[in-house]
Image (cartoon, rainbow, N blue to C red; front, side, top):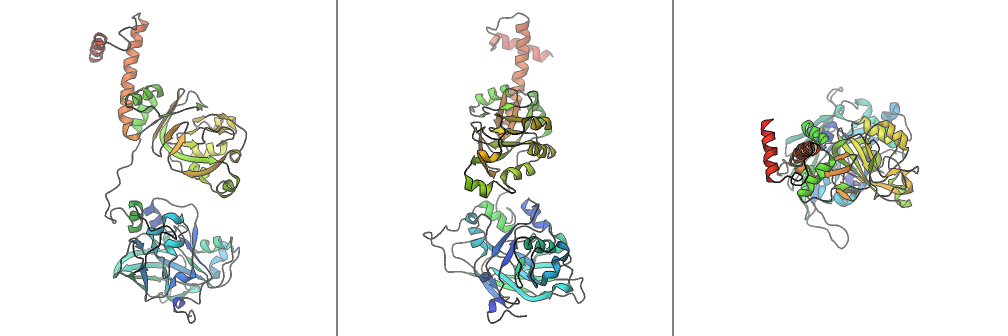
Length: 494
């Protein structure tokens, strides 16, 4: 079938009313990105971005990170609205190949909508031919992509996190999928940057079906554009090393040095921190010039419990009704943090010291415990106080309050630097709490500080024994040279 007189749509039955694309769908790609989504998420692409096989795509002047993404495209054959999963595939008319090109230089300001980074003219080649959806198994389609004749992507729909029919059923819950609409079903690992002169080819086939039907190769040539962007009209392209690594597929492929190994709180170090009192850790940090590292105003719900872990942060902003409407409901930042907190991590919540509402309740405390979290620290209130206490996970809070979150707060963002109890806490900082309070330790100083604190504890215990024995504190606490020599001699003789 042909797309009428407009050659852009020659690989489709006609001009699509809408093109819906998924962010992450293949396990290989999700693992490359280091995150597996629980549910599919989507964005729209304009029909004006469609191009036929044999066409070109321009890399705009002043940009560097144009990346290809070979994908399986589904073309809707009959209208679908609220269709059950078992019947969803019946609404797919055809399957073909697509290339969901993206310009990483323009990603930052679109916050996942991809309007500019993926909506340009020629950014959605589709074709070359259509496969009858009735003649193929949606779980056994093969997708391959070549750049200049070299195979770069090779995966099958068996590697999808979300089956193709699920995407159709899910989208039909929200709006009508009309005949001719296109669903781009995501790209596997192997997507990378292309430059002017490169030729990208994508093919979808069904090797196990009778006749091994194929879309044929969808061919696109990259060219250099002459036109850039006007900063008087909108934001300019911008790249950083993170965007380079994601566009190329890895830091190594982008020619970047490996990221430094992330700090890990080893079991041995965790045991040392559990032994060291917060007051002793505070004294050692003060000796190193760090005075603003205590989370002030919070008290433990379980005074005998010790909390030790690395910070997982959550930030609330003051409640504003329109912002709560857009950020407070659904799978908001608060729920995402409690669903993602890892074993041995401490959820640290910035509530601006505002205790006029709860910042968590027993359900979220249960979720944190089930995830293996080490504790929760909030400079706001706790709702369902007794029920949260009964969960058993260590919690530090300003106190109890019966009101729900929205009375004072909007859950805004996660995994950013936060201000909790007057101190800054970054994701990955080490958090230690006991009855004296909570302290934050920069990871680079943890081992040095805890060893010094434990050494000081041993010294203080020896001094205490001398005081109990009747020795005066003058010259003993702190020790002068004579007492220091006696202490060192005692240590050597143990």
